[in-house]
Length: 366
Image 1: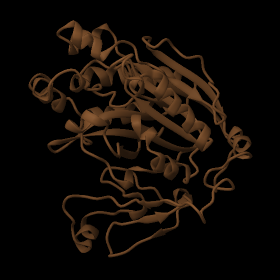
Image 2 (image 1 turned 60 degrees about the vertical axis):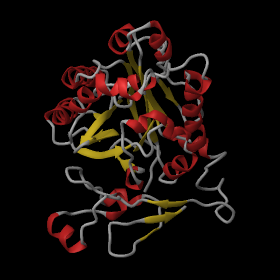
Image 3 (image 1 turned 90 degrees about the vertical axis):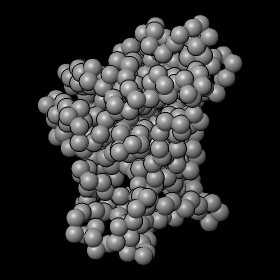
Image 4 (image 1 turned 120 degrees about the horizontal axis):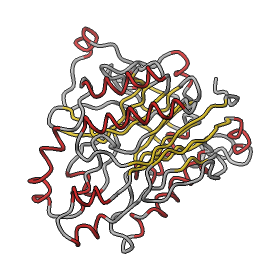
């Protein structure tokens, strides 16, 4: 059962990391978690790949130049799921009794992924979701997620989902999220200052339009969180004025947006670090959906529908008998080792699923 009666407080972070230093950025993250908890929040959200920072170097020079200078360091400062850094984030959520959504560069073997960790107030890892499709030159650094990474989770305060950056430009991804009756959405971004003003599509206005549209279109609360490009970033990434011009300055646009599209907190300046706070009343969603529920009374499934493959894909397929001997999993959610499996109330997701071939497979027609 999806309810719309709860009230609670959330926090959206606008900050720069300690560039490519996982340990120091985790220290900063834990400090921000504590501050948000002291201010009475039940959820605090952090930017895309906040730990150890967004790799701006991939946008300013040849791939070889960036690889020679930054690739090994970035790989070594990306987090494995069993690392002490991830455990510190979980401990901080538990110690301060607050749910956390934090973007990390996840290291899995030799590959990196743009991952969002969803951690509950008990310090349990609810989800490790990977960006479905890294954007443009990001694909020279990161691998892709899969259908199991598109999901919404029942938290004590609300049904919570999250996407990274230009996933908010992917119409079908958004519709799949709406179909799960998402109530609070975390939109995680880097600082969007690249190539300004020559490329408006990379600027703050365009990204803010996409983020606000998510709230309006899905009738959800959106907690938008961003990195910031500061003089420290220029010192770290840039060797000349041309590179500084390409990266730009500022690019922060943290917001907390209601299901009617309005701002619920006063924005910070684009080059300012800080935390936005807002009180959430889920009953506002029911008012917004009176006019347009895109997966309910305002849909036309007889004309338009979405095929959604939630299968967790891997390069090596293990026979089912072997998997059962070593793992417990829920095919509908693509459960991962070390990630809490979602049962009971989470089966409320309104997705008619069918399974085949006795594999970890689920498809849904919306």
